[in-house]
Image (cartoon, rainbow, N blue to C red; front, side, top):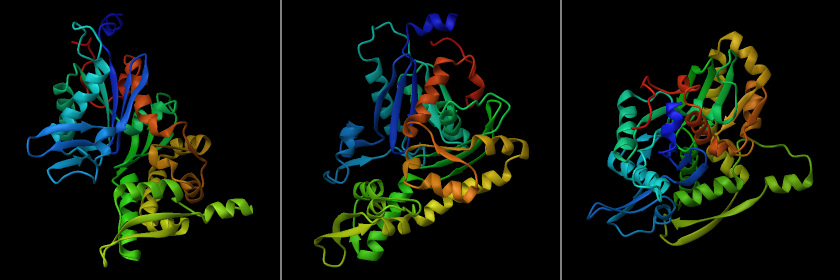
Length: 359
């Protein structure tokens, strides 16, 4: 009752602090911010010039002294000060217009599974310095499972695969806790790097991360879909132009790449993700595995949208595999559900900090 009273005077927030994208959920309002995790910094003065979408526009297009950078690498803080500024920007945007006596918000932040205590402390400190009152952490696979509305508190196995920008999290969840998990630093960003390397090795073409991501979204796939209709076969053979600089002549060049090229480029990384899923299945206790065979494997995160990935995992693991609804926002939605039911779902949080009214 006391928590509900205090919550009226604060604007509690859940944040999915991702390597590629950050999302912010506000209690009773839903997702209010969905922006790239990019910060543009003037290295001469140390001044933050832009954050989020505005900063991403500057990537690869700035003078030498302006650097558009990601302050998180593989889902953890690599630049504390810049991360703090980014969090402050998000929190201030949420609190804009609130009356001056409003309390500092309670904040829940999603973190990768298996991060060290030092890395957890870096996230907590950054959030508190950015204006948060209390800071709680939730592991991303747990948040994704809650966001997918899986029965995580029941005595039954739930299998979730969260494929983000920097990490792939594979977890088996039961009774409000993670029974078994693997964190793999192979995800969306690594697939982009694979395409960049492919262009350099095969065509001596230097391309940027943005071009690689556009190609991945446009014609990337995890496996051949073996389409039966002529229309679908034409779609599978779809080609897209790839523009960059020829490393030999130094001149701009455009080439055409097809789905098979890009699938081949990403094959090694995709296989690592599938292998992590298979290994986790093999190590799952038999009682929980029986539940998972009935429910299936659930895929979340932006990486799960790679065409054919669910089909490939289903083929390899011999279990139903489904992409959850709106997979890119699953983590922040799950963290938001914990935020709004924190007394009932407190066991899903990472750490043992006592839950008290916001200060």
